[in-house]
Amino acid sequence: MKKYKVGIIGAGNIAQSAHLPVYRKLADRAEVVAIADTNLARAQDAAKAFDIPKAYNSVEELLASSDVDFVDICVWNNSHAPAAIAAAKAGKPILCEKPMSDSLAHSLEMESEVKKAGVPFMMAMVFRFSAESTLLHQMTEAGELGDIYYAKTGYIRRRGTPIGWFTDMSKSGGGPVIDIGVHCIDVTWFLMGRPKPTRVSAAVSYAIGNFKTKGISRWTALDPGSGVFDTEDSASAIIHFENGASMLVEVSWALNADGSHYTQICGSKGGAILEPFTVFTENNLGYLADHHPIVPKVNRFEEEIAHFIDCLDTGNKPISPIEDGIAIQRMLAGIYDSARLGKEVVI
Image: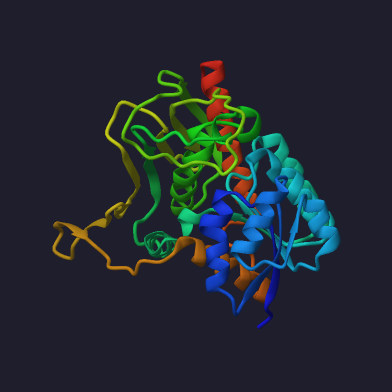
């Protein structure tokens, strides 16, 4: 198999804590040969820490100066589209961190340029790659739970607002909805069979804001940001789909509630939750039964990046293609639009 030369776009926390360590593990299949960041010193520091030969100040410099086989985009949300478009025009396959971008309009621009260039593209929707999600997807695809008609999902942090660019709407495009809500919405929609979203009703809150609560740890961007805080604390929504199914969603960075993270799907033959992994059915004698499939613990980022490389090897379409990125971005936009307008909106 080919060993791929990789260009990393963005030397921030997600690149250094998740993606770059995985490429070390996959050294027989891929080698990071260049990294770019608008903060050149940070790119140089990352290059030194991870033995990367070249560091650049922009995606354009990297693409012009390095012979990379694909790029891995790990920048601010508002920089996803420019980076992906530049890579597409250079003919490079793209792995892009979630969300697709900071807005639906920018996501559609990305899709247009990627499809025009005809390059492979995969959304880095890492929650799809847990062992539990993989098995449950196989079960739903095989029809073991019947028709999936209802789901609910949530990612609730009592206090967990990240520090840095995340709270600056001009860079992030939103708060917990677009940051962590994208994860639970995506994996739940994926397990539902990816039905077409049609309408959404939602509300967002700004009740807590830039809290000073003591005794908690917070994800901190390597770039401290501008200090702007204009994103929401929490949100709730109901999303309806063309096949009649619906999904309830709740998400927060800060909410006076017990923290939780859950995904539940309900079908005509059975249902399941991912945390803890449980399948609800009836047994052969007609009694209710709970099953607890035993699956291995895996590194989701390693599974994700290995899958993208597999797709480059085989030419197969990834399980999180660009069309899925657009569908999720439409749902995220629908949540914000519904909250802003105070009414249900058509997606």
